[in-house]
Image: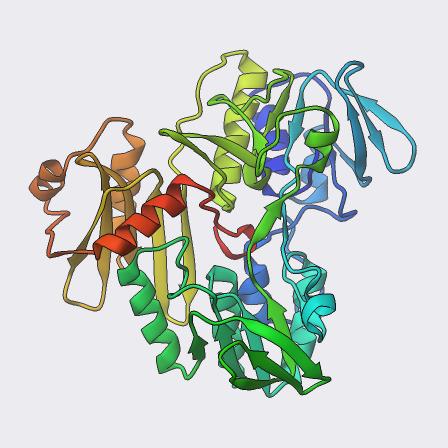
Length: 418
């Protein structure tokens, strides 16, 4: 396994659970014991006193399971000789190779293009550095109104720091949620005095703590801390260098195999079939589900399509957003429960594909059970269950935008979701 994140370590441990008797090696390029990523935009900012990240598995358990940890980075893959080369000059052979290389936050070039010192949030060190600056700050400007940006905004407001969120699209979490959920999330942040700037871009940053942030519409913001939360790019360089098919992620089939059937790709770096499109999902649960599938295939030799239903959640202040499912959509229908919570149902040719819930965990739990069943679920069946009472549709133009987003590169950020 190349990559010491949630996907890589799950393959390793699941292989042992499936009684796989061969050697198992986990190559961890970050050089530390694999650790939990989701808290980095949540608890790591809310409780920054943690001296170390929370490990995914204790070292003693991995040792007892016969899982070898190698704290070196893979720099090349030779598919002809079935070897990987490490940055210390050594080589390792493989029978099965699993690429779980993850994704890297975009925005590395912002300091050069715009000015200022920009934080990005991916590793525990990133989170600790961001917290150290926020702890002594009066104002924070977040570039990006997706889940990472909004979770950090909520954490910063919890410490009394003023927050501006600058988002290029017209609404919050536009690539991930419906207009109805975007509107409710925006209202929650506005109620906590976050200043939201939609349809807006940053043209330049002047000065140094406090920075003066210039927006394209002429506004100027003051900021002690700058955070780039503008999405991630898949870490697919190794795959590309080794001749595997890469197109916005490592291309895999429904069994998560690359064009070389001895090489698999899972998690944030992989682009897999979903309906009539291929998608890449950045969520912990997707990485874990795909890891278990690949481990089962390797351990049992039973090569079968991965049918896992992806899901994720994000908590901001006291509000919870949960999504189950994926796919192209031709309509969104809102079911308002009248108690501050609601769910949004997305359909493709009268079959449910996605359920998006705002403060409705019971809806989310039922949606996951239904979608996991593997058969199409029609609106009538949902109504018979008392689960679905349609009261309104999202505007056509926004439906079209959302469907195009899901069919293209719909991605959930791994550092912010579970």
